Length: 231
Image (cartoon, rainbow, N blue to C red; front, side, top):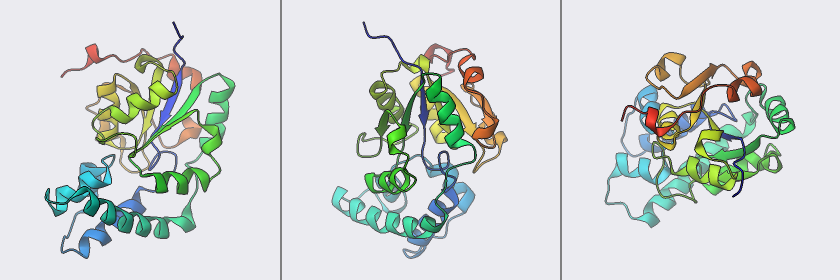
């Protein structure tokens, strides 16, 4: 029987990179051209972690075909990359944190709702791809967060069980996905304040950035299991 590895699983947007304001700006511009006026904070809370095709159908209608949502997603994500490219940078302390984790034998994975082009844009643009043992994105699962699929796949690819995996997230839908996967979660307050995560019993730490986090202390917390969930 293969021994489970300890793993850190990182959401990408808003966690590895502090970019959600640019995603929101591009979504608001995209939907604004189609007659929608949206509240930025409410839009983020309702959509962060969901896949592009899910968001498109929520606001534009379930009648959209897969081909239509794919074409629209290309338009929106191209706008996002144009807006964010001049600002591309890792969240504070990230590179030092993953260096400490790797030295401790922790596997590193990315689990994101981003499409392949955005994964390439971020991980290759920052020369980070080689740091990760596993990557799972929108092309690998059909359902976005709060469904646990992408976290479970990332853990499987990293050869880690949910109890040995810790997720890093910035959005409530992502923390809920980790909860449903039976995983502990660390919240980065890059986008929302700590109060937005008060209802989650799987959150073991909340930090401004990675410089505030200790690898050993995170794994010293009690594992979270589905049996702990209230529903």
